[in-house]
Length: 274
Ligand SMILES: C[S@@+](CC[C@H](N)C(=O)[O-])C[C@H]1O[C@@H](n2cnc3c(N)ncnc32)[C@H](O)[C@@H]1O
Image (tube, rainbow, N blue to C red; front, side, top):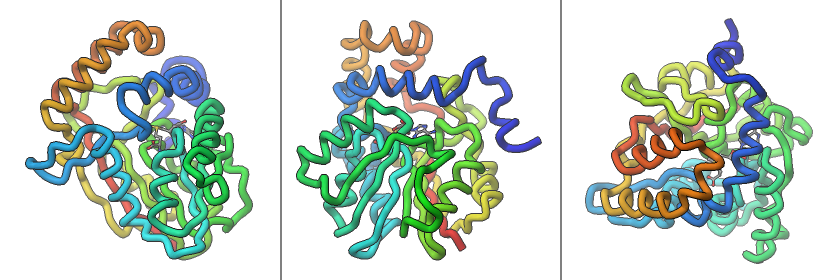
């Protein structure tokens, strides 16, 4: 059985991609109101780090930037770019060009507007595309990241091969993603697929990529209690906007998952094309 077939097993009817588009086209702005412009989890350095969610999500971006460490003038692909916040932070940290893709046309529109607002439109651009079929020639990027986006792609091996295709030999790809643990209570099963950690690594290797670093950072992604309480309160305050997207049961699970440390693991991986 292929990884894709395994991943599709148990999914409700309908294409995952269509559901992801519907989710992000409709939910991105509400998500931003609650969470900020980074649509990913936070990173807390240690128990004394009391950063709020916006700072902590930037801190996770910094972990990826440090791993990618691009040289000036390089062209970097951001796979699953959200509204562009990580791409802007990367472009400010290094003199590079960044091209972001998202399957949500709404996000691409917002990210493009924001590039102008941030004065970065000459170096940071966004395209509407499915990561499984990137609209770029072979070997046209010097590096890439997929920042909490493979989570939405059931056939990760196919997407990783596609990213590898557009990277020049010797390029680095940084991955940040959730993974399942034995006690994980699965949520948003229609739009997320999370292998266990060992399987995740195996998928990367099957795609022909070389794993240089594979780190479980779950402990750093668990928000301090006051941050979790504030997020839960903010979510409850936007209940009427969120429930149409999630349904009432998923909403309850979402609030619970924010209140108590969630059971998903989180990994950072640095891989190279050869
Ligand atoms: C959790 S958000 C992360 C966004 C961004 N990386 C960030 O950290 O702010 C997941 C992103 O992956 C994108 N995505 C999901 N499936 C995709 C696909 N098949 N092709 C391209 N983008 C996809 C979503 O549209 C969204 O932008």
